[in-house]
Image 1 (spheres, rainbow, N blue to C red):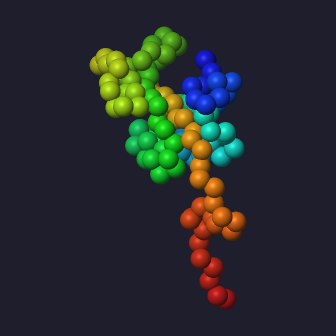
Image 2: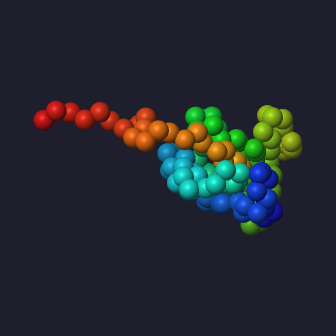
Length: 130
């Protein structure tokens, strides 16, 4: 696979194979890979769960990362073939009439704004008095 496109051309893509995992695991695996990835890194996610079609683009929007590509892949005789590809502008690149075996996403990590000390992700639960 070729190097990631971005500010640092030496960054290698990270592959997350989440095929066979059900929601929410593909997004969780993506988030784990993105946690320490420098800005400009591309993460390629392979997912067979149909929910990933909506979950991964939503995660990208929420985290302000770029979904560069979503491709429907099908395997024929052990060889992967493109069924349909959507680029970052939403333009359909190729299409055929086969049911996808899995989806392939390319997510480019963007730099995240730094948070002040003590600021969490916003997902922490408030503590209860005991």
